[in-house]
View: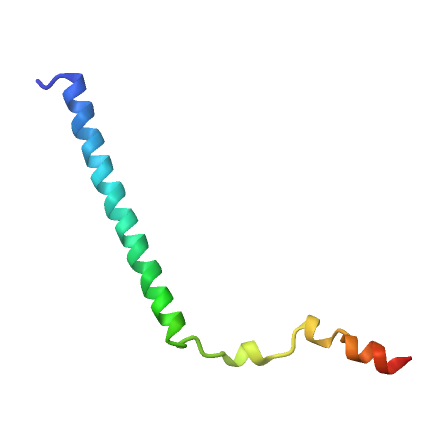
Length: 67
């Protein structure tokens, strides 16, 4: 039977390897997303062109012409 400290070391190594794998995947996804952004692949969707409640608020120009 392995000693408790030996088991802890193996468990820690597995955890570290898993953490590195997760971090590597996150980094890969982040870099892929940045490449897509820089390539301009995020085109506006039809919904993004719909008016929003904020787009109907008076602008500074509206205030200056109202006086």
